[in-house]
Length: 541
Image: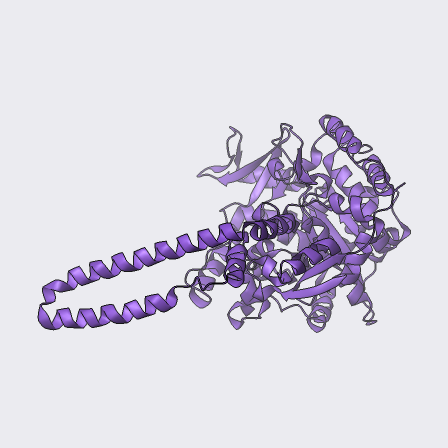
């Protein structure tokens, strides 16, 4: 299935910060506990097992058993939940928003990377047990980011008023959209399977959190993936000391700000943080709304709400009702590492960028900072598309360029005339240098006129070069249009396929072999962008 691996560090889609991290730049060493290798993961496990409290393990297992009570999951998942109660068990974790119908493909890739890393670590035979965890972002309130998905090039959207945590959303208004979607699937074994998954998840659940849990379990239960909704009173109780610390000392704000300054001083002066810390990095749930807490001269207030708290009053509220409080994007990683025996977080470049701001904050909280691993990324390409690329004399790595750059490259390559006028510019440059020397020796006042003429001539050549390229593109229009169509099919809307296309689109065409093939192809520690060829045939019912 895998036909090519492009190192992340050579990809134009990898930010300079993440490329430096993947290259193990020593200037970023202080931002992580260690770079991800099998040896370092093993060492991280020993440290985490030493520091992870037994009572946290007990509460974690009880919470998971409660969350899975109404879900008919696999024996592998049940065994993994039981394993989490054992002192030799650690986790590897990824997290994501509750995207409708899994959202873009990279939702799937994050989970498969996590599953595959757990498999590799369990195969080491060193006495450790490793459980893959999917952290569901049930407390998130960015509904507009998750209320749609792209299916076969069409946007399917759920319009619903939402201000609170998305995990609590009722699915009642979603049902007509599901019905229309199911009717559009046609008749095939794959379509029947998609309808079954919808029936098991969105049609059966009462909230978006439950639906996402059921769907992820249906897709990955056979691989032992354990889904976790951390928005529970029992788990929030474990985080009470850290939330009180946040109110009383604003440690996150101070430590993260210091680390940002250190990155600007020791890494790059133009470093810009992925997320800026707030003085208070907690939200408060009130009447279905998730409201940001702000410190005032007399205590605390809620943004865009009249409710006020005195210092002691809000602290007592945390101790009595921790479930009413929610960490923001910078505090959530600490919450995760407090309640899980976790050794590695798996995320995309944007996620790793804000995790790299947090190590000193974790150290101040005396919580082990996990290893950070870039998730697997992939481009799915069909046999037919590969044949088109070959016929067009386009190499697969070339497809990762912007479409306009790729077309320009092929126009230059296919042209029977040399459209690059650099040779002419070089000759003209020499002539104007001689003219400047002559003007300087004769009358320096002519230098301005020479400079103006130089600019005019070079501007004219640039204009002519563009017109020649445009004319040649017209001559090669049919060829370039085919290149553009291929590029659009693989990079829809000029974006990465994995950030637009939905898993269901590919499942409907390629069926039950798709996930196993992805699991087989991915190597979490390889640090590559995988180009994967789809070869299985559609099966009609």
